[in-house]
Image (cartoon, one colour):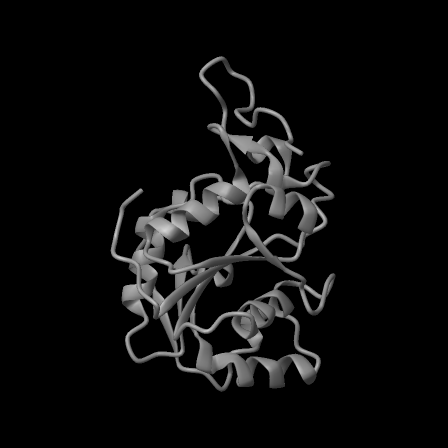
Length: 202
């Protein structure tokens, strides 16, 4: 991961409210390389220059036990759009990177590249194999009102909630940046041939 100067114009948020049904255990707290997946994503955001990072949703007691700041998802079980809105409403920086908690290779380089792509847009989203990766986007906090209107109108998918916003799609990126773990078989394999997830913590 890279280091960069922290800026009050940039904060990070990690969505941790998923049910983890396919994983069979709370994936936020599965260890990879000595860190929980949640800790790894938080570390990447700080390495990319975030002045602060919050965790949205999830097990607040376990999150705070890891020394992290947690806010309740205002719309639990309503999907990622509610978590993104909660993140933007809970931060004060001009731009916010909102990531999932289950990245197997969280990358400060990836976060920085998406930030740089934002330009004058309201949101920058990387595109991989023709698919926009909305849970790796960087948002201007000024996009909050438009997202809230879409949510109030019944929309729950980020890709369909950005109609009022200026969207920049970043077409370059390493596929490994966006690899997440929904099932045990998605976790990295250690040199001994076993899943490199250590054990759930907490």
